[in-house]
Length: 38
Image (tube, rainbow, N blue to C red; front, side, top):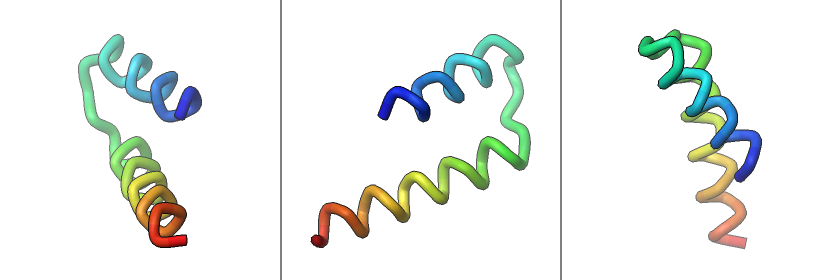
């Protein structure tokens, strides 16, 4: 997921895990797992 990689790069650059990034990670994880089930 290029969008997810971009977010992770920004997170590493800032060296902090903001609640927004954590929330987005959860969303991507749930979406990826649901797509795998399909």
